[in-house]
Length: 121
Image 1 (cartoon, rainbow, N blue to C red):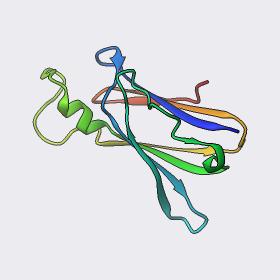
Image 2: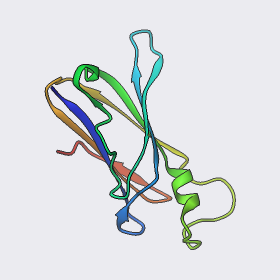
Image 3: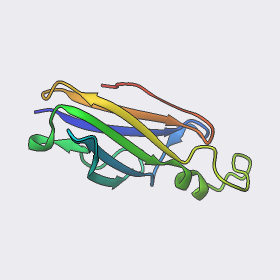
Image 4: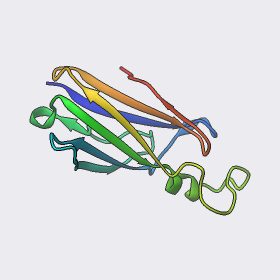
């Protein structure tokens, strides 16, 4: 059976991003989003368990939401943060799962002003 994992790297500091709230949503056939998992990244910037696995792992459209503004507001690096709203608030990555037997890894590389992702292994 397939499974879904993620990993968050703070590219400003060159470290794993610990303590990031992560929500996983699945898009339903009627166009709605359904929350299916919520967790916090550990000290390695990963989740302690796969976000989706076993019987819950199925083909479809999903979204990972990362509370990046909360993460960076908790950081003590005043040089990277200014008063007012954060440039990046919630980073949302929408992706598709087509192979129910594969490992899908969706890493997030993030700074207060940019992010990137890719399908990892």
